Length: 181
Length: 240
Image (cartoon, rainbow over the protein chains, first blue to last red):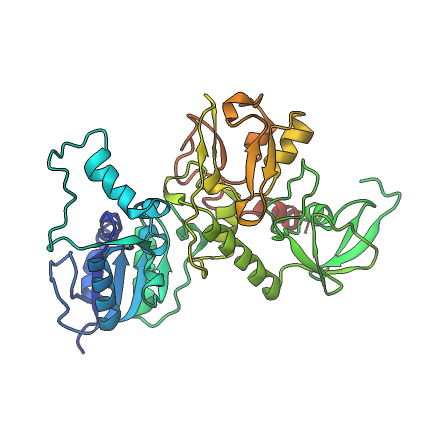
């Protein structure tokens, strides 16, 4: 029987959660016995090639590209996991949510104390994804099945959750592995 | 304990003896039964505002921190119906403020976070509000971060009753309600001091001492390994 597939992505995140995936250390050898990676920055596969059992989402939705990728994951994955505080809450990028978008752009590109921008342009190339009015937690955009808290979630929490899901066991993390920081 | 007069009642099927004048929360604490709470603190007069400590007294919801004990009452505390209400209250507190645990100096020692851990909350069920709240860092040694304030009134009561100062008070109503300081505008213009009980009694990271952040490494903070309330529950397992 073919191994189940998993996919991962980093939306508006810092890749810290992916570092925590790698932080399972030598168990990564057990993981590749259990699963094949599909779309993921870990193997650099850019698009989905198969239906996936589990999708791990790092980061919230800060722009239209994040929303497109997240909806793509929802279509291709049986189970979606919000991985870390940015996916769950919006995280550090969501600090802009109390400030109007135009003010953020003006501060970043026009008024900031270290800005050198004589043309006074705010980047608007069609290649650059449009920013959303605020940063959205993933579960406010698509249905999310599981949440792994932490900044980043502990490697043990990621490992135990993946193994439980891939072996049809309930996800029941001990107290020590549920942390919001 | 002076045995002159005791009031016997039942919490979660356990027979408890209390002294006249005690609240249900105080009697439960002494008996080693943890009733979750946020605004209540053993050194402060009860406020009864957070409703986390709501228990059923003969079937009626009452806040355990304000309700006096009475002979023969039957109190239900650790039941699914109440724990769901508590989860909902915690959820609402999280989405109504801006609680960024990942960079908060209080993380690991925060009572709001610790309660969420105890109740196994993995994500709030309500949409985040992302309210615009301000920070007052005018004082050289202390700051108020209203993003993290849960309006428990502990600082207000501690400043008034323990420090004898009246530095803090609520202003506004509903979503506009916030902790204000007893000065024209700034915390720096009050007579607050770093040694005030009002600071150390804040359950969250709203009222903080400067230059004290992240003093305890991860793994050695108050709630890293033991759920909040474990100290109270240990009394019961110790006495059998």
